[in-house]
Image (cartoon, rainbow, N blue to C red):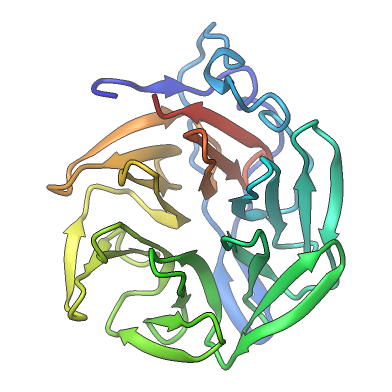
Length: 294
């Protein structure tokens, strides 16, 4: 991976302008990711080549402020449409359907070991579980603008409380506890195999690390502006969206970063499948993009 920077060109250059200004959401004002300005240098590189293994969804567009991405065990990909209140599913054969609807503002997504989908509903302050198309039930409530979610190695769901600057851990039975406080508008969360939790802070562009004993520390400041997208791969590598720079970055154990995908138009969501393909969704052109990690 050293020195790798793939610039998004053909599939990333189209579409409209990025969302700008504030979006009113249930009495809370949330700043939309700003336009990045320069979408990156033009290139003749074949973006289909970097999407090997992602033919069913790479380049899919027409989303509505896509904020979360998660992969199912069958290879399907789920995308939350923040503005439309829906979650879409793209099957391994490319079939695209609405998987859940009538949500508030669906943000982060996560899939458990059984294949059930979990959705952070930002405006309704709940986490819902979708066990089949259209079968939506409340899993946990009482949050404060939940945004990013991810499972830890023990099967607990980690949730960012954007409004209260907290990380909440939710057990499989729905019991919840605050495990970290004092963050700076946390919007993304991911955990590695060693029990460390990483948090992307919307304010200040700082990536935090929460140690197993609950200590919060600065891990990396090498970002122009973080977003919801934050993942740890099966190889225990950490990747984060730098929405303001229009890049996806790999974060090394010492906190240094390396861009692995650039030229994106306000990337917000980030996910990784079992085959090691990284997926991001952009607000600027409402499109899915992929790059292999190997």
